[in-house]
Each structure stands twice: as structure tokens, then as C-alpha cells.
Length: 500
Image (cartoon, rainbow, N blue to C red; front, side, top):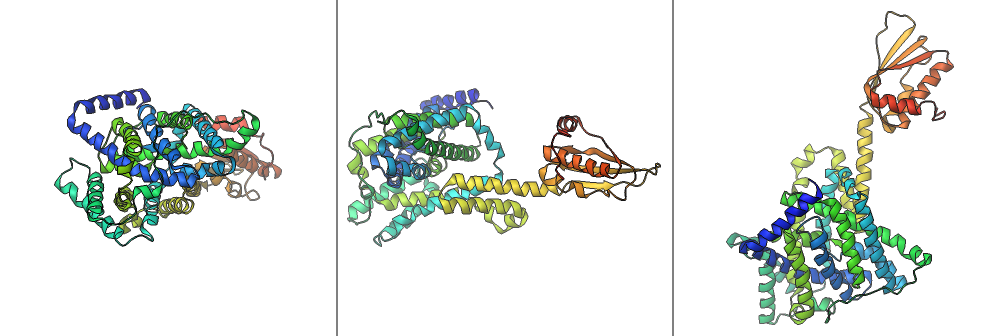
């Protein structure tokens, strides 16, 4: 499906939602729940980046509102994230706020360029086992991010979290008109206030802003030295942001059984980061936890929920900051724990699944999970998983190539070898050792009718075989090459030097 039909369809869904009170209610309530969940996360990520909490909160507002219009995946939430905070933290620490904002703007511009150049198409090279590892690692990270809120806290926090989880498990059996996470947050807040229970609240996480975000132009010299400072961080931020956003978009595609425009999502993230930078925000990307709250827990499906998540966030922290500040963190921790449980692919670790799944696939998933959790960087985990998958695939395919010596022909001075399989760098390296250079007769025929040459390594291996025979005064004829193999062989043979 192309970008234009998808975009048209997504806006058609918005119009349809506006005309349906039931659907609109779902979108509005989903946006409110997400906004409440965004507040402590944005504050926490601001602390990681070493900036004022307002920088993260304003970034979440501008990212969500902007991506609602320019993004390619309806109902996905983009805001300030931990992955981006980790990447840009050194800039804020070593060079200050102005350089941080300049980095965010440059990263956004790079993301737009990457999107236009079609980087989203690289998603097809990410195997399913890496996607499963990505999802499971995200679930683990979401849970681990809640652990600090459960350590060294009053004992009352634990029963509150348990009650919050119970509400979200059982309330949907009564009705799904109101999202269970919202009910849990409201009820726990009322109980804590009414009973006067002293537990950590959202207000304890950091100061909430008291004014609207304003335009911000970074005061940095437009020189090569400035570019040299911010470019490495901007490139890293752009790549991490696009990777996390595209993987999250694919996950939402699977959850909602719909298709999204990944190319538009890539450059849309860039536009959102540029806008965020010019409003003094720390930048961001798609948020898996809040997206799952929006799509899976609350049932949202359109851009309305994403837009309202940003709007409600601004209203809550600026206009209703005093009210939001008294929400117990236990309520939000319960929501995130349920998101973690719902995100994890439990089927992937069932004994029956593990027995049926090839060990290489399981290894790829585990590598993705371990690296992601160890580094708290989704990009590192996905890259490691893809690399392991490539190595495993190369090793597996390499064994599919065989060289068979056919029975002697009527001609006493001729020997025929039939090569079968895919010839590439992993499978062709041993090709040179499959022939009897001394014992074979004068004329050698290598039949490639059931083989395919994919790269220069294979051409070099065939050249090496020919060279070894010629040194012993024997002739080699290669037959049966398909058109693609013929083109590649004719272009490279004799031009690669002596490989053996």
C-alpha cells in the first residue's frame, strides 16, 4: 500500500471518529490516560538528559501534537524518550542547553533526509526473531523502569499497586466504555487523598511548568566547529529515533492488523523533532509503553488520541498542575506494569515454542533481549540481533552448496563436476578444495546449471579453481550459467587478482 492511500484512509478515520460519539469517547479517554502516563516519564527522561523537567514535558507536548499531523502511523505516541535522553545527555552536560537544542534540530533535519532517501525500506531486513526480541526487551525495560518507584518507599505503595493492577484486570469484564487504566488512576488518587495516605506523588518527581512553551532559537555560532561538536550526537539521535519509531510502528501494525506508511513516519519524526527543538524541547521518538496504553489498553485507533495526548499533557501540567501533582506514583506504576505484561510475547518463551523453534532463531531473540536490556538502548539490541541473524543465515545457507563428481563419460580425458546451491562469500570459500587437481584428466567441465553466483568471492573462487588446473596443464570449461550468473561472471572473471 502506498503512502497516499494510507494517509487518506487515516484522515477518513478521523472524520468517522468525529461523527461517532462512541469512537470519539474512546479516542478522548485514551488521550487522557496517555497524557497522565507521559508526565512522570517525561520528567524522568529530563533528569537522565540533565535538563529542566520542563524541557522534557514541552518536548512530549510538541512531539505528540506534531506527529499527529505528519506521522505515518495513526494512534502511535511520540514524545521524549529514554533512548534519546541517553544519546543527547553528553551534549547538555558538556556544552549546555543551546548546543542541545541545536543537536535536536539537526537530528530532525537528518531524519527528514533519511526518510526521503527511503531508509524505512531497510525494515524488511529485520527478521521476525529480532522483532520478538525487541518486543520482549521493551517489556522488560518498561518493568525495570518502574522498579525505582517500588524501592525504599512506604509500605502502602505495594497494596496500592496491587489494587491498581487488580482494577485493570477485572474492570474490563464489567465494561470497556471507560479505559481501565483511567479508572485505576482516578480511584487510587481518591483513596490516597481521602485516607490521607502518605506515598510518593507525581509532584515529587519534579517541578511542573507554569507557562506555555515559547519559541527558542539556540545561540550557537554557525561554524564548522559547532557542526563538529553536535553532528555525531545528531546522527546517533536520528538513527536511534528512526529505528525505535519504525519498529514501534510495525508492532502497532501487527496489533491493529493495519498497514502504515513507514517512509512518512520516518520523515514525520524528523519534522516533529525540528518543531520540538525550536520550542526548546529535548526531542524524542515513538514511545512503546504509551503507544501500547493508547492502542492496546485503551483501544484508540486514530490520530485524534495522539493529538489529544499532547493537548491534555499541556493542559494538565500548566493549567491543572496542582491536581496532577497529587496523583500517587503507585497508580502510574500499576499502569506501566500492566503495559509491560501486555507487551511481552509470552508465547515466544513457552516450552513448546522453544522446542519447535530453530536454535538459531532463539539465539537471535536472546541476543536482542540481552543487549537491549544491558545497554538500555534499543538500537544496540536490534543491530546486535540483526548481525547475529545474518551470521546464522550465512552459516546455514553455506551448507546448502555441494560439488558432485559425476561418473566418467565416454571420453577418457574428461571429468564433469556438478555444483549445486547458492554461491556467495560464505559458501564459495571452500569451493577450491572440492576438486582433484592431480588425479583428474586433461579436460574439466564445471556444470553450474543448478547453482547461482551471487558475488565477487564466488567468481574469485572459480578463477582460483581454473588457475590451479591450468598450472597442471589442464583445461577448464564452465557451463550451465544462468543469465544473471553469466553477466556477473563475465564482468569480474580475471579482474580480481590471485585469491589463492
